[in-house]
Image (cartoon, rainbow, N blue to C red; front, side):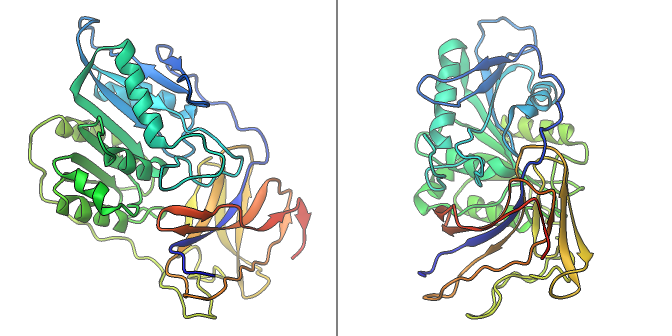
Length: 380
């Protein structure tokens, strides 16, 4: 096998039953789709400040994290939009091209099989659609993204002729960005919001993003909070402060770098050895990341493994979205083959797999490498 970096091994437990109902979305949000863009559902929330209807307004475009679904509309329309009440707010939903889609917001560089268009084109089309039906203040067009949508937000913001004047990116990885794209960061204003105790997306991503963007000439403000991955620690006042700063000409304050949570060793072993950190879960879940999109996944390290003393125990009730336990392996041994092996014991499992995704940079090389599809009930 030729060298591909990084490679990611995903152990996924997928839906069992239909998801529970969510709160009703905000009544004033207009449900729209784009001509020529299949599955391009987005919601347009009007300004709520009572000013003249024909006055040009700012535009906040939101790429929700997690599964990127319409379930985030109450949070966006009632919470996020309240921080910019004189703005139009467009919340996109992530198109689902495959039932086992690993990348929620695919881009030009991180594609998924069967996708009809990348997120960059989708976002540009939404901005153009809003411009047709509403008056938009071109000096105030902002982008908000978190978690799974963060890499796509960077791709959108750093694309040629981006319409955005600033972006708020929370709890996101820092993807591989080509030098030509990174050069477009000069003069851009960004807020990076991250928790130093984030166990899903480690704080090192925020540090790498800050260093790369600031070196490229962007004006970057670091924001931190407590509570790990998610909108914790009174997020709306923090969001308001960040958005207000994006709309100002104020310089970025010097970053205060917190002490990061310790992580297990992730340096891969030599050729012929196990490439995973903590492969038998003897050290709990150290080295592994949990992506609990549904909020209903329970992942623990428990006694009783087939080999060794411990095993990963996954339990989930309900349906979509997909939940993942994964580990990223970088710098595969050059010229070597890769063997994936796992001991699995199941009870009542449906739509569950062990998968190995291969990437070259951020580009998906293989997305359908199924190590095993797990049956309903089975012993080791």
